[in-house]
Amino acid sequence: MPKVHFVWDIHYRCNFRCPYCWFDKNWEQMETHNRNLSLTDMIAVWKRIYDRHGECHIAITGGEPSIYPYFIDLIEELSKMHTIKVTSQLSGDYYTFARRINPERVNLDMNFHPLEAKIEPFIRKVLALKNKGFRGGVCYLAYPPQMDKIDFYRQEFEKHGIGFALAAFWGEWQGKNYPAAYTAEEKKMMAPYLGDVDRMNYHLEGRKTKGKLCRSGQLYASIKADGTVTRCGPLSHKPIGNLFDDNFKLFDTPMPCEAEICPCDEYVWIVDEDRAK
Ligand code: SF4
Ligand code: SF4
Image 1 (cartoon, protein in one colour):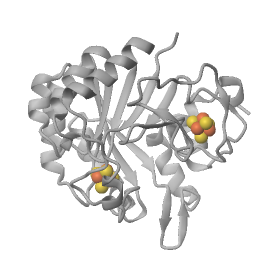
Image 2: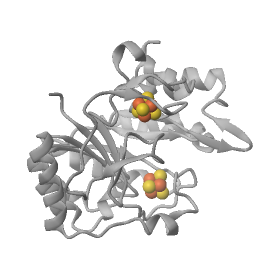
Image 3: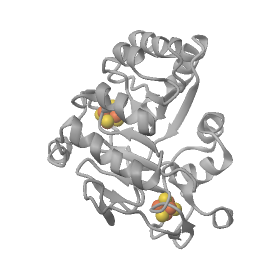
């Protein structure tokens, strides 16, 4: 049985206020969804998942995970059962994290937000983590007002041996809808830093996915801070259960996609022969 992957919005709280954030201007309302389980109870929840599905991969995001209460203790315990990826802007205590956490079990997606963070301390933390054996590169959002700085930041990271990737902006800026509004020249410039061809098609072209057979909900699921589980981000309005329920269960088989498009990386769960269509 292939490993089950979860994406978990551990909480909706952040000490940054990026204008392009999904939650911008909505933080107060989002924070009402946070559930404050004790460390012991939270570990018990993930032990139940371990007993049902074996070792899973948990991609932890938020909000900013590193400001979650008992964050380092939790990662230390969860990583004994499951492998973990943390997406973070690195504002938390990553020096203690680097000392205590096993890089064989945990990797990092490090997001640099130039409107909220300074590059020198950010690079220092990345290098401290790399020195302890943590893998993972830095991701920068191709947000229209900060696109002219892409080359500068790419060079800064690369000269310290830090991998650099871009994410496409999904949203509206100056009356234009992105990613459709990227010019051909911008797409060409971004292509080498976006990843594979599929990623280009689904990220930049918004390829239609409705009806395609997909393993999200079976081998992959998205968890909100209140425990609500959905197949994926685009189907976040259609819960399939709650992580904190004793009887929570994933689908037994792949199911047809019910969304028009799949704007993030979740298209990888489309069953191979349907993905090519
Ligand atoms: S760091 Fe991430 S979660 Fe926090 S405001 Fe920026 S985009 Fe949103
Ligand atoms: S293709 Fe994307 S949107 Fe559709 S079910 Fe799969 S993950 Fe969800």
